[in-house]
Image (cartoon, rainbow, N blue to C red; front, top):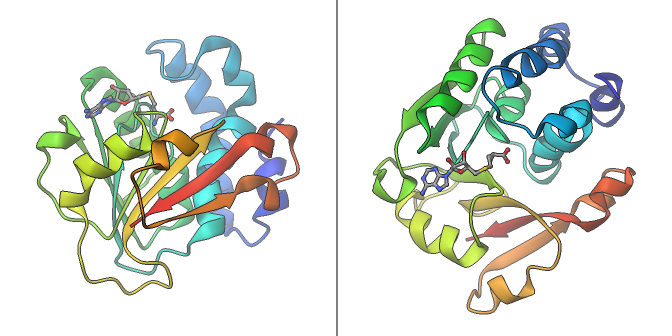
Length: 206
Ligand code: SAH
């Protein structure tokens, strides 16, 4: 599977974006062999399970120019890097508590010429910045993520969705939402036909 998969669901990419998404196909395997950010056997699924999955958030919301977004627990840059390529006029701050993973983010961001990414080596509980949206995948349960990150969400929003947390989630997560009142679930199978997405959602908590 390669870049064509991205083009199938996002046909209006600029030639610059096409170049950047294509570059990821070489850069991730190269960096992953030095610093593990994707499981070794999953690297062959890079475009479907990491890049397209990250772009699921772009099916749910169109970040306006100037939007500030935090990727909490970005690891090797998911979902932050694919989203930063897709939304070049929004700004993404990618944080992780493991410095060596951020080295991969910084290298890939430099080599693809991304200008709208900054990184921070910290635990997001201790991070004080304010953002319009927080994006995240595979870090902690929804209730824990929201309770620890709501301090970072700007109260005034300008998008059709309220400012909040957009979390990429798989499997059954109903328990994690029991105490939550303001959320909406977007099934990625409504947008993407691959069987991988049958159990995947974007959960918007606000
Ligand atoms: N979001 C990436 C990485 C998931 S692995 C992806 O989907 O591929 C979880 C990541 O969260 C790890 O890189 C870990 O270092 C980071 N992490 C876990 N708890 C964290 C915290 N409290 N603050 C910052 N990063 C955290």
